[in-house]
Image (cartoon, rainbow, N blue to C red):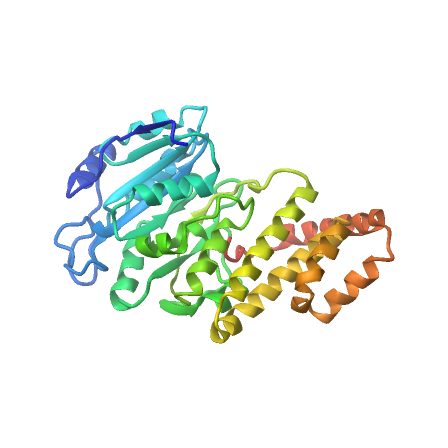
Length: 372
């Protein structure tokens, strides 16, 4: 429920550029695209897809007084300025709203009771009037050409309903770890194959048509994990081709995992997520099922491994009753073997595996995390 709505101002015309110039000491950049037009929103192409004014940026935030300004500044520096910047303050108890208020005239701030990031993003989507929605989190930042490159891709591929840009993950001290080599130039990717291949897709790199988001129903507020990929899947079954900019334009902050609660609760959340995807899968035609199945099998395998690792035999029994056909032979064998092993032994073995993986992860410099 919305507790209060603080409308700083809707950003229309050149007002955002003027306010941005004042907030940055008058040094607003005017990016120059290949077509010779400025990136400030002036004299952009008349095609709605190509116009920077048709983009709304939605930023959910919670108790981010110490970091939200950095995220907002990265939006203010875009070579192609958005028409709207909407911050949804999800019940912050610190000075977040005071920091956002400094951007009055550039940002519309909506305050609501704490309901989680999915609900906050949905609030932002509902408040937006632009044709396209781009997402950013309060501890992430964009490179200056993030919107420009996405709009260039959409201008060249007018049939696309959504697109994404690659990202890098920030180190603990603000450094940017080296990326494994990436392809160059924009691309058109089959979403399901890209997600399975752990293409560097993240929510702050997404740009989706507003009507497509509403058609898909927005983010599921009942999910405690995977609410982003859950929505992307519902979009992909209708629009399987994702535009992709391989240039890393998003810097993902080094933050602790957003999932709280016990390992048992986490396993239950995974079960709920996989069941939702199974329900979506069953509603599709044969062609879409063929694209979707490998990714669904991957999630079923992750659920099985997690349940085994934490000794959740009840979840294994519950899931295999409806989803055993999704599992690979080695996973089915592991489940059968687990029935004869005490749960405490499974937990101990799982803890050992996690320690090994943690040690390996600390040695790994790759930054790909998939679609999270």
